[in-house]
Length: 169
Image 1 (tube, one colour):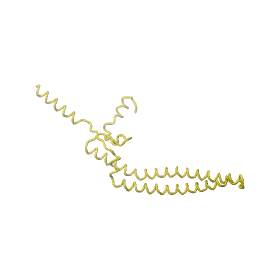
Image 2 (tube, rainbow, N blue to C red):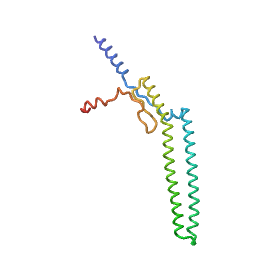
Image 3 (cartoon, rainbow, N blue to C red):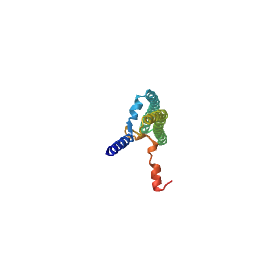
Image 4 (cartoon, rainbow, N blue to C red):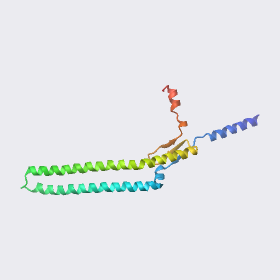
């Protein structure tokens, strides 16, 4: 009888070991850097950035030229105050345009980055989830700084149990 009890306990212990939740991790940033698509995306983003930098450089040159001309006008006593005011306003407007253009460039670059990266990120996330399921992982955590869980098996979700305990539907 004791032997049967010991064997039963060993079988239960082995079952408990097999029932442990598998948790894995991956550095998704490192993975993405290894993909050939990442190089293409980076090249396209750099080209877009260079275009915006050229536009900004041209606007900055224009503003500097107008500012230099304004300084000469301001120092010239023969030029009326109304002309000086108009020229000052032109320079201020150019500075505003430059700032607005800078902001727009940043927004457009962020949009482009998101547009290009989203399909790649979705592909990586889907692949990680498939590999996790096939290999029996309940959770996969991303070790990239600032990241968290990128896959979780819904059968481990405690929400229904906690809602029931709290009486929430």
